[in-house]
Image (cartoon, rainbow, N blue to C red; front, side, top):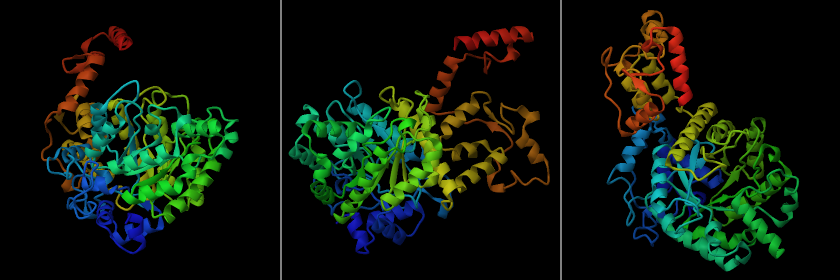
Length: 547
């Protein structure tokens, strides 16, 4: 029985209770949302058990216990303990815990989570080896970075190396849902034109048996949609969409994923794999956004949502990648109407096309608006989007950018208790309680390192303003001003030596020092090193020119 089938019969599964705990809502609410199709719980029975691609010894992993706590930021009150609001330090501690979520045969097993627009916004990270670079060990490392820095799900998009081995290693080391695009494996060692129905079904079954939690299936790209792509600037930018378009043109037949949809659904139901109905005709630039090709496919996806639900299979819908800012909310509304409010999972969207190398920023702007307008999950974009294969540090940058977008969206949508995290950090900031600020910060290690780069003492001011100009310190001196008066957020003493930074913070400071040399604890460009103002400006300009 799948999560959808259980919910429709009125049952509350162990996984629904865990999701309810992590979302600070009643289990009945989760059950009703799953039954409605407005929420999905991607949870392959083999990943739930951590059975390493084998048949679980327990009853589909459903009898296994989960941690008693939902998480939440340090010191969060009971009604604000959202799993998504854990800090990097908390996530790292959970990942490194030897006995946390151990699998039957695998190092780790799945901790269930929910995706839906009436709960907190989720973030997906994409990784994957390519024919050009990377391998299994590097991809498992990327998984660990993604989990640590905020990914709620992860997709393995490998197209090179030993795909089966890499996929199993990622599943076996992950406590978050893993998704794939099965067509990538279907064409390893063969031309797309040679893809057969039998190959498609065998690969779907193979990956479902490994424990994949959700599949991107590009079943909505129909043969009759292809002429609509002609006027586009960038054509078909989806790898899966372009491969299937080539197959249809070569054979003169309908999309095989569409033709086999019921057979694929039967396999997915057996393991409780969730559909992520792929947007093979998503726009690849602003000029192609919201065009007829995109909308024609979306209408087909709306029909497939109903067919998947009728088969007892959970379904979410993938959304566009490049959309002008003013069209994003409209896209969210249209998907809700056409797809019967199935969870919308969007790539970005990118709101401008001219910043390659910085697309984690251009897309996070669009992702924030998408989250505010009802997107259930945001697929991150890294700085390497459009230019190369992401490395571990790119995964980190993409995850952090999208954690910002998702959290900002939750606040804007009025998720109860979502802003409590921000308010608690603000109280610590008003009290000039540096240790508490860094404990509450999402990435406190980086924040501490940047603070200590200039001032290694936790004083009642920072290096930006100094003592005399610090507005927070002055505000605390104004008796009528309440900010910073909360006794729970006062520092233990007025000033104290910094506890220092960890390995990651130290590495960050060494890198920054390499870029800009430090003299007597200050960057070499500081004018205090040279009394003469004119010479100081010249030295500063020369140093900056070298960096």
